[in-house]
Image (cartoon, rainbow, N blue to C red; front, side, top):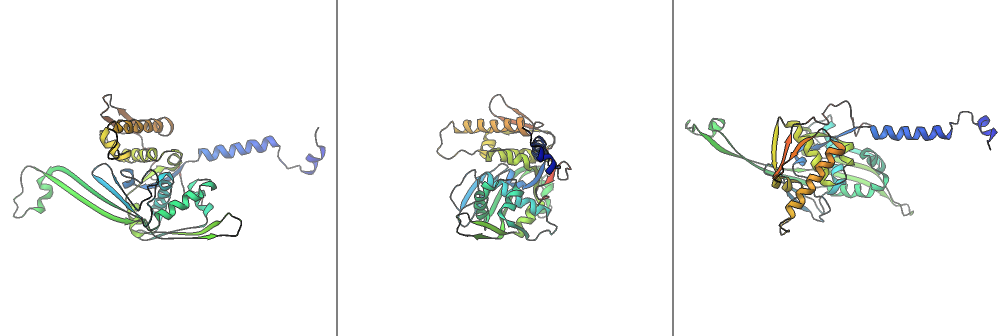
Length: 330
């Protein structure tokens, strides 16, 4: 039976069907929205631990002779939420108008921080946990790169002009130690309801971290980065984007190097563990290509020796107009 008074008393109230259609339209628009963020390019080579290591120290070897050492007062950042928060901090550093100095990020409520990360309210505890891990944490990196070069490239290192006419082996050693933050502050309100409130967040990125990000950051599709469930998958996606920014042709990447970088084998593991981890990496690559980055080009060697990565269209560029930065709506 129709309610004849409803149309007369509320002539501008939309029909239920119209309301449902509008809700679906808004949801579809939200899903189509492309968001861009940044991560330090260094962390595409060696990244955070996959899970909670419950340790103030974590060491990972990456490719190209890089070793990453994370240190923190109590526990180093980790997992997929640590990676999402790292991308947020990096993005704020890159976008700061002030260069080579501390960058201050402020949120009135925890919900504002979660909204910027595109995460639901239920993930508030996980993000606060990672923020506490980043507080006073730092990362040190060491890189050792050796290559044959003409001796003339290093002629200034020879005395008396006695420069060999042949190529020489040149080894470059680089180190650095960078704090993520200079300080983190927030308030917790206990009103007796059993549901404490968190707000007045103030995150101060250290000058050295801000400068590092402004010089060495790679743009990523944040929507894709967030959607990829596994931490290893996130790392592989970011690495693919980074490599395609500088790749001119094709490059062969050995199986051992892939495993060492993305799913390292723990000392004392079963002899077949490298093969198992390599298969997991190939599974993640296939998921990324099928679901998120169909343009990526790679070939799996049939003999199991590794993959050949070929130059592919870069999914996101620094000034890509298809994307809104994750900070733009806050």
